[in-house]
Length: 116
Image 1 (tube, one colour):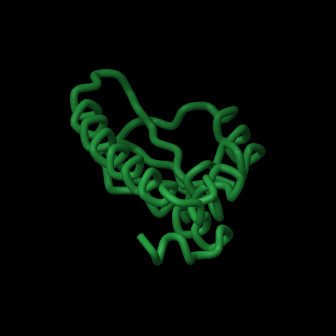
Image 2 (tube, one colour; image 1 turned 45 degrees about the vertical axis):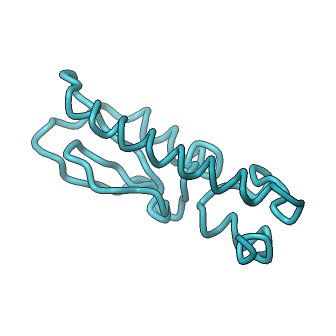
């Protein structure tokens, strides 16, 4: 975790794909350990959500940022917001709103498409 503490906040935010303001001050004693524990817990939770997604019986579309480091392949339609990271609703709200305002596309597989 010494590396985590030495990373500039801007670089860490870019690596994680989160807004810089969302990061705790990991240079403070104990904060890096807390952040790593939270990331590990989040990873476990994400695996559980992925398993649950397979059981959803209604149409689902995932909207993600094209630069999201946490994005993984799924078997549902995915729309990528160009240039967005993990929080496209915060960093690219106009592109997301424009996509959501469009009529739903026919569902024929899990093809990815681009928005904005």
